[in-house]
Length: 214
Image 1 (cartoon, helix red, strand yellow):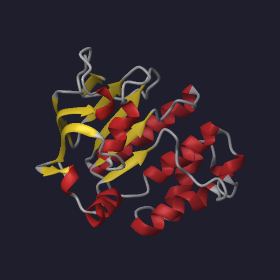
Image 2: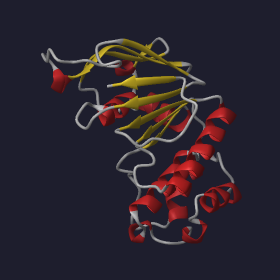
Image 3: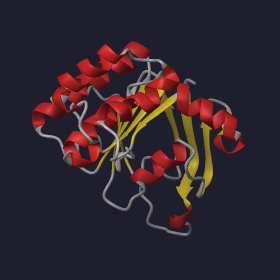
Image 4: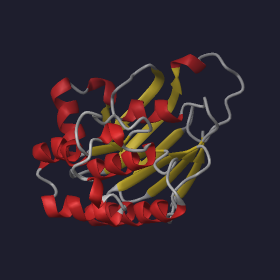
């Protein structure tokens, strides 16, 4: 997959509104593999909805979204499964990790399906993010910022054409935010992938190719 194309897309909840001023909604926007995008928005402007549409968790929108020439609404469940396993990875704002499992177990659930990282690589990533000593700790007993770092490493445990990161450093200090940005950039460059960051203010310091406002 080389492009994600939004064509006159608008969340259904915004139908009929006349005050939409956006670089994304109701526009034709092409997001290209290999480029880095920052999408900023005030709360309630549809930032998380955008991510949910792109990964196929929701389709309550007007207009179309395409992967290259393929309309997302035409993808079968099997095709979506493959898409999320090898083409799209996501760092969710609400993380969606299992509190009853350890940090390493949360990551290995995905990595057991993709075989993308070695155990040593996973442990090295946790070390780099300052939570190497938490690999065997239950995620439910960690702070949100620590959980955020676990979810980030999990997002890297697969091949991808595009990575979506919804407010990825919202609960990180500057040092860990900087480390995450470096690791994120290294991974997308290695895979030749596109990166889409959403933010309501605090975002990683990256060489963005484009800055959009919802």
